[in-house]
Image 1: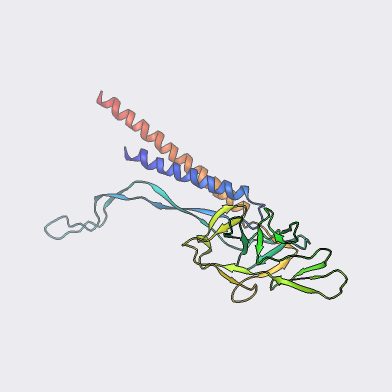
Image 2: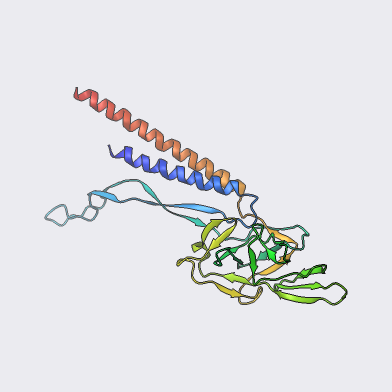
Length: 262
């Protein structure tokens, strides 16, 4: 019976949907996390009686056909790059992006990754790094015993050196933009890498040419809406249960048919 396999595809789709929702909820407090959404499409149809077919010599056309669907398939888990809420932390090395763009990070293999997580630290050499110790690009080193670290909305980093009262500019933080942000590959640690689908990275100065600006002393929170996720979870759970009931009903119908043939 076709209903068995059709309902099975529905159960598998809802199982994947619950996994996506669970990951979103698990990352509700992850800095800069962007929620995912499972997307589905229907499978091929068996056109038992094709609509529009001529059914008589007088030219009568079928106004309604018989199309039997074969279920559902997952086509993607799109990442929604909407802005998260900015929360003030008053930590001088916490930097939030307000608008479009990613911080550029150099990995140990000298390749680059990109992140919205601006909870930066300082390593033993005074360089601005991520929580994993990866150097933020362009590399900026903060001199020892300097004070008054300031990062302005345009990404200019300055400090007051020891024995001086005049701020000194150390460097410029940049933001990287992509034509298709949803095409970035998530690699964990709040990092993304470019793919052929994302387009080539475009580095630029914050608050120029469409890039967002920077907010020192703040962090961007996850864009997960807990109420919406719980609603989606209940919907997926109910859909899973209904598909399982279809399998039970189909099994009972097959059993009844089998008994009739004995």
